[in-house]
Amino acid sequence: MGEGIQPADLGFFSVLASAGSLSAAARELGITTPAVSRHLAQMEARLGVGLVNRTTRRMGLTPEGELYLEHARRILGEIQDLGELLGAAKSSPQGLLRVNATLGFGRTQIAPLISRFVRQHPGVDVQLQLSVNPPPLTDDAFDVCIRFGAPPDARVIARHIAPNRRLLCASPAYLKQHGTPRTPDDLQRHNCLWITSLPALRRWPFDTADGIRVVHIGGNVVANNAETVLQLAVAGVGITRLADVIVGEALRRGALIPILTDWHHVEPVPLFVTYPSGRHLAPKVRVMVDFLVEEFGRAPWRV
Image (cartoon, rainbow, N blue to C red; front, top):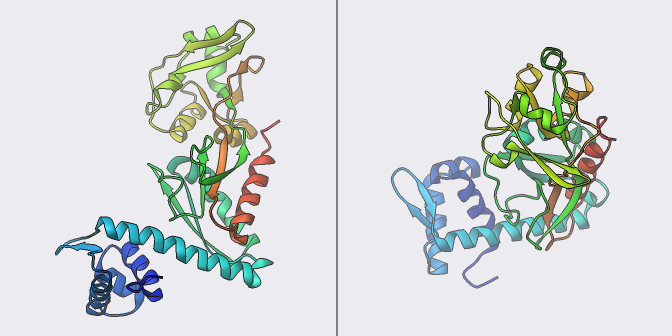
């Protein structure tokens, strides 16, 4: 490390940045707020740059502080991974595992799995963060990220979890009242549900012998996330087209029925779990990745 950087500074600054204020960091570290302020001032004096912009109400990192934090988190993560690889964690995964997923999918699909995971691996402490706007896959703040679509960045490794097939389905009550579509064109005479935040999902493609056939659907109720659209479909409002990992449970219990199963739907982007490529695969990361692949791979609705 450089002459101005002390090993103890890395953990201190990581806690300070996460806490968001000097007083919150003091509570986290078990010291006084003046002590936190002095430690930060000493760090900045040794480095010769400001790391934090402080006001009476809030604290923000300078560009130099952002750079320091990025490297500090990476170094701390590598130290923790090294300890796991050299110690007992090699056979028994342990330590903090930071997992990120999108908000709706994470709440309905990932969160229920976490309880089973921690029962299987009691030495691992899982910190699950769900994001409306997920951070970049290269963000060192997370050990594992769960995403739809293969990552465009070569600095991360992606392992396929599920094919994420789109399924057309509706409730038994809706089909009883309005009839079951026999061809894709029949959808134009039905109430269809889609996600307003993804306008492309209003165009439902089918792979036919004559090429891709796109049906433009319409309906009188829309929602801004897949989970709400699912609830509307179960309630009998209309027909929807959602990923099997989202509608699978409703299909299993008969709340929804798949339709137009003889027509081949164009495959959407698959579901992946990603982790940084520049570090050893820590046991805690390995068991989480294997767990997700197994859980989604054996889903009862998937053929």
